[in-house]
Length: 254
Image 1 (spheres, rainbow, N blue to C red):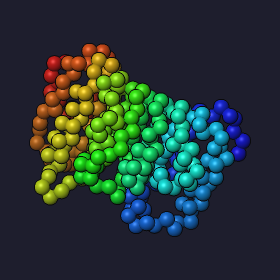
Image 2 (tube, rainbow, N blue to C red; image 1 turned 90 degrees about the horizontal axis):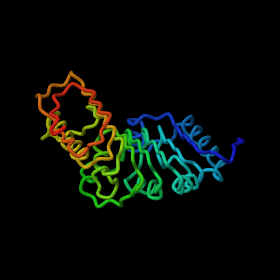
Image 3 (spheres, helix red, strand yellow; image 1 turned 180 degrees about the horizontal axis):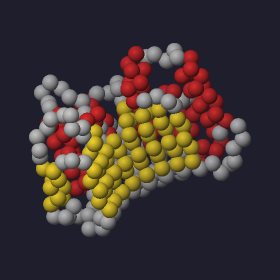
């Protein structure tokens, strides 16, 4: 492989979906020859470009587990101090510590996208109550996330993100974003999740210019109508507001 030394954008993609990654973590089944050959190719390619990775400014990881990458490749990715954009799509971490180890040194990160970033060995309850090590993104201005249990627990971690400086906020909410116990219903979980979402929006301030909420809730589930109160009183510079969904929104002090 021949690459120019001015490499700036890097995408590392497997072909696994979230459910496959979770099943693989639980069953510890990594004997598939085709999958192992693909991962070996990915890792060999990364080794070839290790000298250039510190210059990368945009990184996407998708369809793989963090432990699929060889330790030398993990170390180099963790040291990408110039990284400004990070996309994590269908990525498996064995624990929250792996996520924080990956992101701790991304001090120049401006754009973060998280969708189906999962920790099957850490329950959502553990995430809610654990004292987690906190990566801090002092320059983050754009956040897009699938608003599932794992993302919520991380976003609610004090010190992870300074929401007051966010200019672009995009959340997607679907029925797949919930884990239910015997005492909860879909309606209860949706209401709780909307409160959490509203709290984050309230934590933003005058820097917010774009707010987009995609509420992709299937009509085949029954739930009672309710109001989702959002206060946008502090978002005096908001110029782009998108609601995609079928719920009754209450916009207060807009």
